[in-house]
Image (cartoon, rainbow, N blue to C red):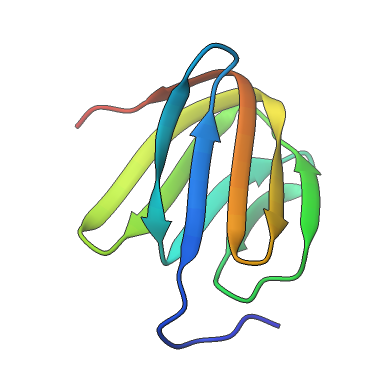
Length: 92
């Protein structure tokens, strides 16, 4: 069960050849082979295969969007790691 409060997630989005984005967030939403998933602080450990789609990261100053495909999403101890063969920030 997700906890609410002042906890934050430490998020890293990594492509095959570079770091796409890293920072602190309050929520991450990504598309997996099992469907869209939302991650909040306190989420149980998870390892999921990504489907091609948009990753939405809610930060203290707004949001970040990235397209990611061919990879996985890992959650453990309020750390979210997204590793994708192809990933890029969405501008705008």
